[in-house]
Length: 124
Image 1 (cartoon, rainbow, N blue to C red):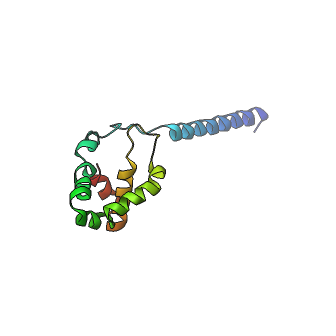
Image 2 (image 1 turned 90 degrees about the horizontal axis):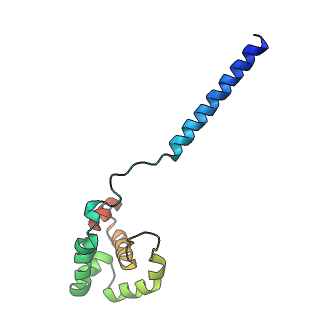
Image 3 (image 1 turned 90 degrees about the vertical axis):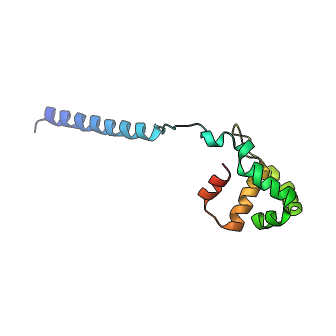
């Protein structure tokens, strides 16, 4: 092989490496296109959701069921909420869950041992 052929082969190899690197970088930076910013069923969760209807009703009217749901009384729940509420508050998103909702979901998850998908469906 003469020096000119070696130089051409090295340039082709270098160009191939640059092409592979650019392709990998493009794929890593490419974001998945989403169908929805917020699913249509989740847009009305504040009005029709699990927390707005069932949990608030149990807390105010059926404390026995609230205890079964969270494993604590409403007064103890309120006390715990005052202790950890500021750490549960999110300010980054447009429509964040309230600390009350976050604590209820966490306690329900810990008391029932259900899947995260079930929690997501319950608190749509």
